[in-house]
Image (tube, rainbow, N blue to C red; front, side):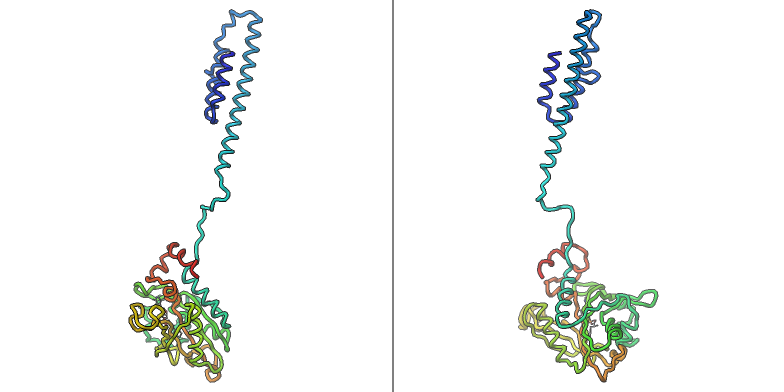
Length: 339
Ligand code: FA5
């Protein structure tokens, strides 16, 4: 018994894991363990009464000792494991479970435009993406035989509604709702049934703007555009107007930006012209004002339609429009820190 006790103490000293302690329990107290076999193999017939008593008492003490020591060792192993695990936990390590997204480059530019225009007293108004033919075309003086109303250019829904092809659809809605005088921008998503290439998408963003007040002229339009673009590109910019045709403005223009890359000398980006076509605009057609419930004899106004997607591409140097809708977070992550 003394031998077995010493063997047990030795074994427990070198055990470091709960599994090793469990094996020791099996080796000593299990069905075939050395302590269990002591009792099974004892030849009581050859023992005196006193020897039997002694044997029984010593065996019980050994069992108790073994049980106690093994339990102690098992608890010590358990505590050591918890301690080891909590030591592995580094509360200062950066989180790795959740990945935060980033704002889309178009959203960044939209938010910037909203700030700039709000600073000039404009309201921001959002219109519906699903529109009626009336607001998208008819109220804007776009006749029935105009190609924009063709199935080839417009997504028609089954209920005769359409996906708006431009944010100009919100002009008459807003004039009807708020009346004159008004300064407002309408940023939003537009849809055209177009073949996709590096500069054309079927789903893109525009930011429309209108100002209606007394004595509004082309000079006001140019001033607002120049201030806005200077703030967007964070430097003084030059702009020019060329004639352009849109049925809902008269006169209509294409506003060009002096090329920021070559300073107007001519480069591949501006196709050697020194100018980049940027914002279609013009004075609001009297017919459109009338649809909006505004008397064109009393009020005049201007409207413009910035291609927000293309503006974001210019601002961030994105060369292919297809990155914009690809849904890959790696695209977004590159721009959120640049503003
Ligand atoms: C219009 O949509 C007019 N509603 C703009 C306007 C507003 C004129 C107010 C006058 C007064 P346009 O079709 O040119 O015009 O589009 C305006 C801008 O939207 C373009 O300059 C371009 O930047 C952007 N755009 C048009 N089609 C696409 C497309 N498929 N993909 C990406 N951007 C586009």
